[in-house]
Length: 153
Image (cartoon, rainbow, N blue to C red; front, side, top):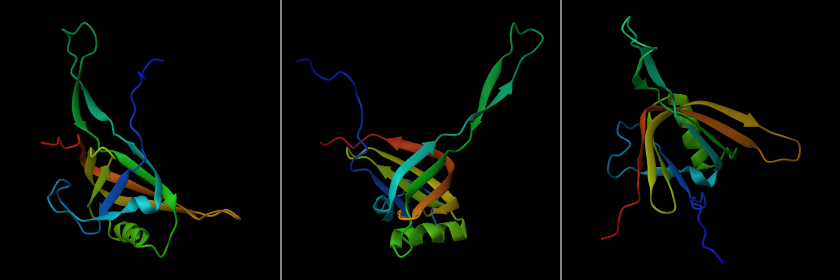
């Protein structure tokens, strides 16, 4: 029998957090997170595109480009609408004040993704006989910073 050659990382044990207070640094020490993983069951983080600037001149053999600023990501959280849950109330508060919060995605191995963002939209969905569903859209401000798990001494 041969060993597994493919590599993957499980989403099991993923922790998703958002600060309940306005923040300016997603990597600040001592941040306290509202654990959103109790109501959120799907996260889709789509990185933005980098601006491109054409720099071609008459001396160019073909069009030439340089990269500019990268646009921030958009994140969609899909989950359950639980109106009385503190996690739900924190997301609705964030939608209401449209202020930057620190977000953290923490994987089971301890690696993280951290960013600042604001909740820009939510949707509510109900179907006969189903579970109430919610989608929260977050606009990232700045870059998402990914960090490997800390190495044990």
